[in-house]
Length: 285
Image (cartoon, rainbow, N blue to C red; front, side, top):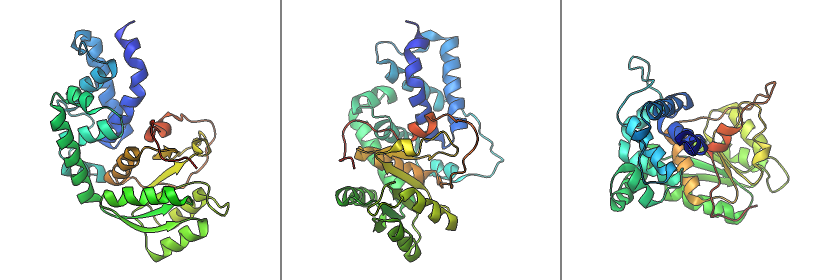
């Protein structure tokens, strides 16, 4: 089997990682293309004796750390640009490799060419840096008490404040009237049969805010109509995935938009990759 065939299954996940680092799918894809061009020109540069996925990410970060792509110094800086400047590169890389990509500490050490002990320190440093610059009020829209308690604990562990917990559409709007949140975590199906999606859309009529959907019914959101949600986590969820996407949503200042159906069927891949559901879990609804 050729190198191209062995790394092909891992490319969608590498695109997800690249987007997390850059805050832009276009910029992230440019780095992925640069890696592929490097490997085509010099297949021997691919690390030998390692898992293909580990080797691919190692190649990617070698390119990421050595060249600048799609950078426009004269252009106004985005929230992502400012956030990236505030967090040192190595902790950011280690944090995303663990929390979003699911690599083990040993695998991350191989990718970053450091010791497992250093990886642990980098991840802890990243968590501290992210929390310091993104602390905000979080509204949780979730009707299952145990799940909402889990989410509250995760949010507070990251250094954020819980502005309210809503079990219905009506309660969610009431909480927003009391205090505008800086982030919304929302289920789709709520206690009285109302819709968390409708509640979010109504909230977005008043102001822009990042939204992470946490649901047992991702197919209700992955419809092929644009825009699909940037941040989507499937129940049962892994706590580290929630932590990573909360930090990512706030880190890049990614505000949600009200869906506007368009003709045709779009590519679902980006929305799916924005929030995967790794093994291990909180109870599904």
